[in-house]
Length: 117
Image (tube, rainbow, N blue to C red; front, side, top):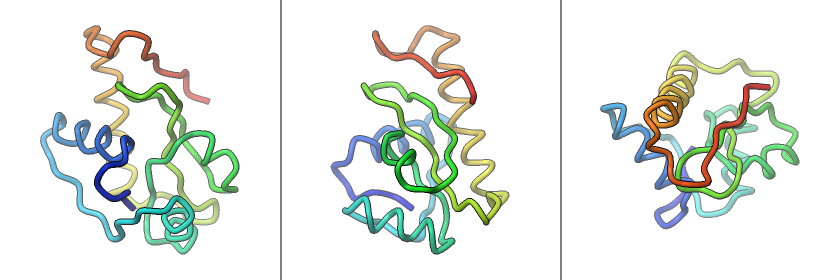
């Protein structure tokens, strides 16, 4: 799932993917949070969403704080549905990008990664 152009979460997600050397493909592009979360609940795939939204959504979430955003975001996925291999690889790629940026000091000032939890 991917938000429409103009969403900061989209731009950060796409930048992380580009830095990892690939362009993601997505089944649904939406402009409304509820529509994207509904698609996740329906099993169409995961979505990178603000952590506050993931916490209220009833979906499972893996929180992380990407560069350039002053909030926590999370990869939301259905509780009953395990991540697909592609979604698991996507999560690993995004987290590796963020960890590398943190290790090399290239995270923007004030950006921090949250410990896994």
